[in-house]
Each structure stands twice: as structure tokens, then as C-alpha cells.
Image (cartoon, rainbow, N blue to C red; front, side, top):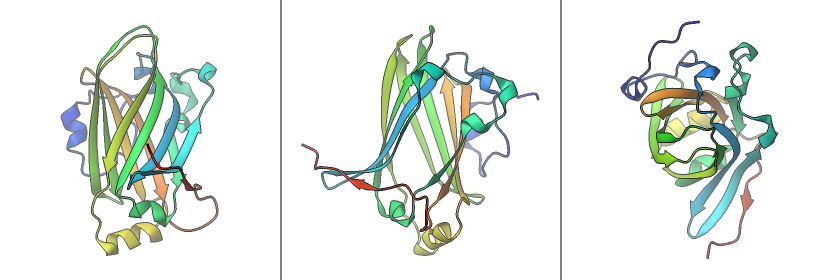
Length: 197
């Protein structure tokens, strides 16, 4: 499969989710490996843990184009309460290989069906080679019409996101996720945590 050159402007102007991945797994020449991921709500001096996952760091990044796309496709069942939080923080732990990262940029586009709900854009100016790093970002959740919120709750996995990772304006990774905000079994357990100091 051929992959055309993709620019930051290309992904920022996308009006609908992609129907395929825009780069192969092997485009991750910097050997960026996501090890742990935590999502939390930040509100009134309290944190609420929404999701916390990790992988074995010895597994290394997946760079083999022959294995299929499962390694970069994710599904989350958060339940309806998630949509009531106004500020979401994420904490991403990752390692990189022998080459430094300059202008490591993540652009994340969230959709309900073919409707763009929100776009986020975060940049780390520099990452030292052969290091384990933490990237913390804060998302301000969009104001949502009650009818849209209800439609999102009633249509599991109709909400999705494309996450694009650039280094020096070159697309090196592309992940996709689908979200279920309905009630039901399999929901992520929401844990209240002590107040922040």
C-alpha cells in the first residue's frame, strides 16, 4: 500500500474521520513507544481517575507492517458520566530510540459520526534520545448541546478520534480510537482520588 506525504495542514483540515491509516507502522523511525496512559478528570481541586493502562516496556514499539493494524486501534467504554467533566488531563509515558525528537506534535481530532466535535494540538519542543518521558496535557471539553450529548450516549462507538504524531512536521504515527458513553457492563471504573495538595 502506498502512503502519500501527509502534512500538518492536511490533518487540520480533515472534516471527517479517516477511513484508513495515513502512515505505516514502520514510519515510526524514532522508535516512539507508548508505555502507560492515564486519563483523569480535574475538578475543584480533586482528581477522578477515569482510565489507567500500561504495557510491558520490554515489548518495544510495534514497527512491523505485516502484523495488521490492531496495535493502533483502541476501544474505550467510559459511560455517560465522562461527558459531564469539563477538564480532562492525560498522562502519557513513552520512550524513544537513539534519535532526538524535535517538535514532537500530537494533533487529535474527535468526531461524532462525520461531525467534528473538537480538535486538540499539543507540542513537545524536544525529547532527549534513549529516555523515558512523561507527557501531560489538559483537554478542555467542548460545550455540547444536550441533544448531541444524548445522541452520543445512545450510539455506542459512533464517537471516534484520529491521533496524529508528527516529528519536525513529518507524520510518524497515526492511531484511531472509538468511544462508548452508554451505561452498561464493561464501563471503565471511575475512581475518586484524594484532593490535590
